[in-house]
Structure formats: structure tokens, C-alpha cells
Length: 141
Image 1 (cartoon, rainbow, N blue to C red):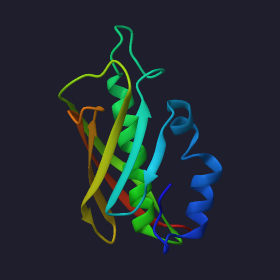
Image 2 (cartoon, rainbow, N blue to C red):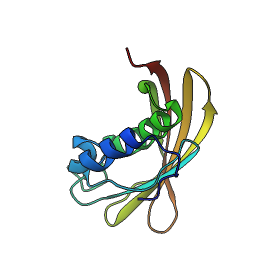
Image 3 (cartoon, rainbow, N blue to C red):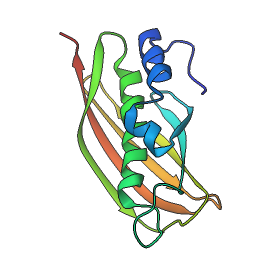
């Protein structure tokens, strides 16, 4: 996993120890690059398909939210945390096999709010879905 040098050590420790969280581990999500402005992860289609053999739409959202949340937490910095307040997804194509890759780019990195757009593509580079997520940044009490 590629992470910036100035990343909060406590956040890095939590990410490494948890594999990105229990659900991310169950889904097989691999975090490849992490930063507030740009992050990348991938996920296998196998094990994440719905009954007719397509990658489940909810799996797209889990992948997108995993990246958007971590990117927002990175931006929040030490002593702060990110809480998801809105997410939506538009599915354009489907996948039945292989891996999908999500690229997360910041639209807004504010003092109290982050918004990211996450584009999920198949191995051929075709856009499968677009996820947009907003996170509220809070201080740890």
C-alpha cells in the first residue's frame, strides 16, 4: 500500500491492523494508494456477485465508501475523524469476472466537509459505476 509520508501514524496503524476494516477484508478489497486527494483500491468480482452472476451493486458502493472514508480520514488528520453523511451511485455497466479498480478523487477538501468522486472500472478500463460520497469531519472528544 502506497501512503504519503505525512500520514497520521495512528491511522496507518489502524488501517494496517484491520486491513481497512472487517467489511473491506470480507470483500477482498486491496488498498493500493492512499491520500486525501487521490486514492486507489481494487476488489475481486468473485465472491461479490449477486444471484444472476453480476458484481453486486452494493459491492460497488462498499468499495467506493471504503475509499471515500479513508481518504476523508486522511484529510481530517490527527485528533479528528470522518463520518459519512451521504453516498450515491450510478451503475453504467456490469462485470462478471476478474477485478474492478476504484479511483477516488477529492472534489472538496474543506475544514468540516469532504466530498469525493469514486470511479469504478473493469480490467478493460470500462467505467462500471460512479460513486459520490460526502463525509463530515469531527473532532475526537
